[in-house]
Image (cartoon, rainbow, N blue to C red; front, side, top):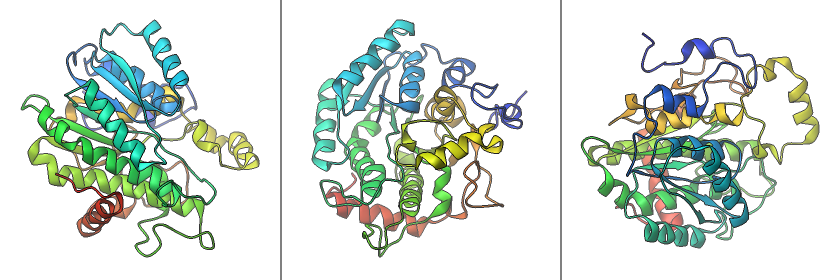
Length: 341
């Protein structure tokens, strides 16, 4: 029998590129016997109209849960719903909430809209994100990658924590899953320059910082709220050709695509959302959290090149930095103007 904490280890050992034998998110749901098992439960996913977000919505809906997702564009959101409805056998609700993550006011409004639609929330997947953007600021004056990838999700989650806690039961506790990245290995938090400055701005460092923040936030949720029935996990989805590469220079993307050592590791969007769903609904994670996952297992410690884009390993700071995690949590509360319950 496969190790429950490494259920697909054999399939990840010899990758052959997009569409190979590595699992999809839907297979994870099927293999754990969770098709239509979550009827009456509620899931919410940020960024559900692109890439792995769409596939996470699709697979989570297959569990029978009512699934809501955030979007910036209503027309795109409606197309996603139409597409999933044509293939899904689930009778669960499928709906969207408009949210612009460049605006904390929009985040607050999105929470109100969601709570007007559902009094329950069992699974929150913080999936949306941007990568490698030129220096710019959110509407609230934060460096955009830190603001969108971390602060917007932090506020969104803090405002939903009471509902997550209220929805937890002894049989099914609530989960928060933060989609991080192997790029967390490129940076911790720059306490003096977390908001950066155009003169010193480095898009790769800023992205890495925001992805470390995703991990630390999930760890803190598990530590602070695990005893109250809310657990936090973070995941690295792996390499996927998605819109996340929009700000990566075209010549670099072309070089990646011609590199066989990169291509064999790349995943389809369906495969790239597998670890997210394993974290969100995998039975092995019931009542547990505080881990960074990659390739549907707890990521091993990084022992090689910290700039190897295809690494499935965790930086030394992905776990065990409680003081730093608490410092980030307190700073985030101050920056978004909301205290966790």
